[in-house]
Amino acid sequence: MEEIKFKPLDRDRIVIGVDRLTRFKETESKYLRVFKDILINNLISPKYKKSEIDEMDYSVLKDIAEHIINSSLEILVPNAAQDLVINKRLAEYEKTLFKLNPEVEKLLDNKINYSAVIKIIPDNPPINLKWLIMLSKSGNPEADSFLHALHFPIKKLVICEGITEEILLPEFARILDYDFDKYGVHLISAGGKNQVVRMFYKFAEILKIPIFILLDSDAAKNYNEILPRLRSGDKIYILEHGEFEDILPSALIEKTLAYSIANISSTPREDFDRSGGMVHYLEEYFRHRGVHEFKKADFAQALKLNIAGPEDVSDEFKNIISVLRAM
Image (cartoon, rainbow, N blue to C red; front, side, top):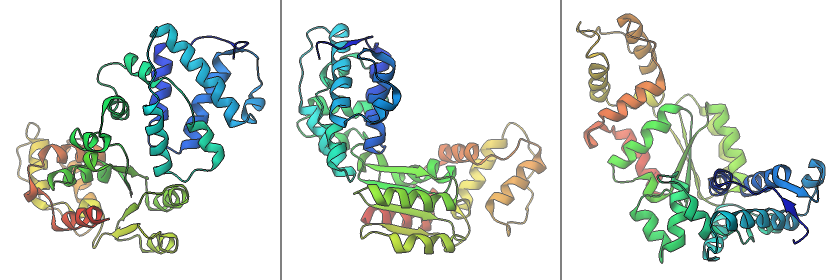
């Protein structure tokens, strides 16, 4: 590596790169993105075309990127000791999480000086970097991650349809003593039932951990599309009636509406027809009041603020969390 010339990475670039390497994302894609970006933007000599970098053996790519990272860290954190325990723990975690081939494992077999990286991570970093810091000093990472609710290692994936589920399901779970961050449950909202199917197909091919799929009651077709590819540890839960908003407790809805319009309107609530579903009802409610346009994400955040205890969790939510917990 003596013949390599490069432009050193600054602190922000290193932290951003390590942040990307420790997120919940397919191993190959995230490592290639970070390592290729370093060669394209910081390697001066030898100079490779992008097409040559794309075709480069993973071991060579890893060695060059690792050299640039560690040499840059020597400038930022002189004489920093190196402890490969972190590297081993990260590699073991990725192998537990994803199905990896030998080529991808070459990317994980690196000697990035994470001990030095930790010294330049700013205060209050993303939760994956808090987990990385914990890996550097914990004798029992599993127990410490649970104790400090660090979300990692990811042990289950939840795929749901929309933003309301993404905001509220973890809060309902927390109220029921199943904190997603403590138990390593990662939730992704796909943006619609068809996207849920596509996302499940993708993750079922590459993940080793179980997947929980949550669908609205009108998603029978999507349920049947998923069923043949369901693995032994996976679960599908289809709501009994309507969509996610329809199984919210009425008392929680009323409490949140009163909170939302407290300083805007004092007229009594009109009893709009709810037969079209809760979302339709709320759209009509907000339109009639002239408050503002009903937005699912904003209202979900308001609902979250008003969840006080188990009395604000419907029976079906309790059943959802019970099925998820038992996986």
